[in-house]
Length: 211
Image (cartoon, rainbow, N blue to C red; front, side):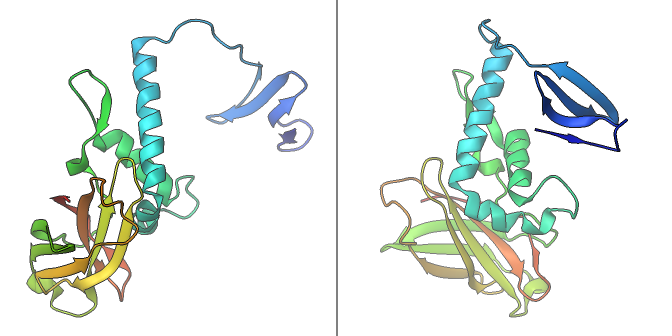
């Protein structure tokens, strides 16, 4: 089905019979159906497809975290929602390459929360008797109960975990029970960030390490 734009003399979007119409940079274009290519992909095409597949799978596994962490960055009327902004970040800023030149996720470059607040500094994570122990240097700017610390646990092949307001940002340390949704045999990368619960603002997340 096609949609006619701007009256009978306008262009159209979609398929009519065997032709397709679309608008590119203000110009209406009509083309025939694309033919499936039998040529093997070039190295650049193969690599691009690998990157797209990795980003898609990784972001899908961690969608709950990204939906929250990028919610305040989406703009009204933009085609990019919170999840699409996260995908764009992962594709452009997070992917690296292993020794065989296959794309991998560089977790230290990943931002699971994004915002304009000052992020925590000198962060550490450890596990003690089944509980997550977090440390950071508190900032005098956050000496108010409205500033909370958010925690995210992110995995390459397992469910993520998002815990909000696990502590006051001014505390400098806290214990958090191990989230029940996490697979105890999997590896998780830990991130924390500051959340202004009154004005709905976030800081960029900070990478703490692996548990």
